[in-house]
Structure formats: structure tokens, C-alpha cells
Image (tube, rainbow, N blue to C red):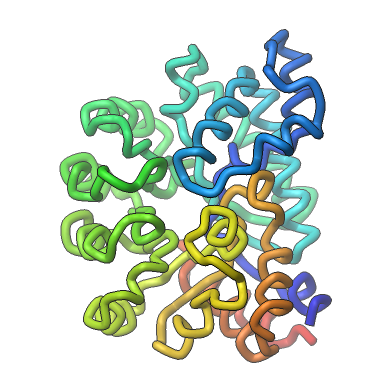
Length: 331
């Protein structure tokens, strides 16, 4: 089963590229850019990862982000993730990035895009892995800031497939961003939203009915509302679930009680993803392995979760069909 988790072709739909910044690269980029970190070693950085809630994680996350300054930095970061993903059997990735975490530091939207698109183009040429970029708004900032960020993204509509909503969830409901999401939809972007990670089921309802999203990121707490579960199942609404992240942020107390099997049994289009793999202890195959070890995830369940990743991807129908056929043929 462990071999199967890495061997099956799969899509990853919930990966924050800034959250794939490994400690070794953080130190290397800090040195390259002349940035003084409060961490002197890889061990010190890893010791700072002793968080148990979302806001504590984000404090470390934004500090790490400070080493990203040039297009070369973003290219190195994205290439490292894509190489790791390809080794895990990922053939398509839909990658989140947070421009509002870079713009106040004087890093332009164009700089971020140059680096990310150089890496994604190289990965498609050399590794055969395709990818899409999804720009996320930081929900602890106001909607006006999100509106300005959307304006910056519009000239890159051919390279950014969607917009999302991430960062501190509690106290920042999806409805706070209804107008900018309406503009994004009108401009042709696909829509996703972090909801039901720390926030209540009501946030998932808002993401569906106020924002009109195409996918829910996380969505664990939707299981607390039976009518919401029925709605998600009836609509075929995908959930991009991140097991190791759930454990580290105490969304679940123990991997043995992770709800992924309940999601499948309820008919939900659940998928497995890595979220912020550097911070949460593993890439996508590691997340499958953790589920296999903790709840005895069966081969049929693993294949169903992988099948769901292609069903939920923002890919043309013919491309999905090709990937699903390859999955069915994989031993």
C-alpha cells in the first residue's frame, strides 16, 4: 500500500507554494539575499514548528516567506516542490500563491509570476507534470486590499486559473469577500475557498452560497452539519483535505480518528493533499501513508481518493479522461 500511494498517478489540488519552503532552502535564500533570520540553523527552524493552531503556524509561515525576493527565488521554490511532487506520482498540481504576502515587502506581482511560471514550464518540459496557479487572498486583510490584488492579476489571466481565500479563518467569514469574488468570477477565474478548517460549518455554507465556489479547501467541519453534507454530496462539491495539516493544527486530535473515510462513505468528493508540506511533515504520498498507517486505508479507498483528485481538478474533460484511464491501468 505504501508503494501504491506513491506509484499511482494523481493530482494535488491544495498546496501553498510558500508552505513548501524547506528549512535548508530558507537559510540558503536568506544568505543569497542578505536577510538576517532569527534562526541560525535547520534545527532551530524545525524547533519553531512546534505550533498547534493556525495563527501560530501563520506567524512562522510569514516569517519564512521573507526570504523570497527575486524571480529566481520563486523559481527555485516552485521547482523544488514540483520535483518532489513528481517523485510522489503527481502528474498535475494546482498551486496556491499569496501575492499579498510579498507586495508589502516590495516584491512585485510580476516578479512572483516570472519565477513561478518559469518553474512550471520547466517542470512540464522535463518532468511531464502540468500545473495551474491559483492566487489566494489573505482573509485577515480587508476586501479593498483583495480588490487591488485582483487588479494586478487580471493581466495574467492566461496564467492564473483561479482565486482562493486563505490565512486566518476565524473571524473572517467568506462573505467578507463577496464583491471581489463576484468580480473574479465575472473575469473568468475559477473560485476556491478555505472553509471549515477552524471555522464553523456556516463558513462552508457561505463559500457555497455567497461566493459561489467551485471547490472547498479543507471542509472538515462540514461533517458537523448533516444537511450540509447532503448538499455537498448532491452537488459533487470537492473537498481538498490535508490530513497531516489537520493533525498538526489539532483539527483532528489523532490520525486514527481522521474523517476521510466518513467523507467517502457520505459520498463526498474528498481528495488528499499536503497543504504546507515543509511545515506539516510531508508531501502528498506522506499524507496517504499516514492515513494507511492510522486507519488502515484500503486500496479501493486510496484509488477512490486519487480518482477524486482528477474529478475535482480544473482540467478539460478529455484530459481528465486520459488521467483516469492511466489511473485505472496502474497496478
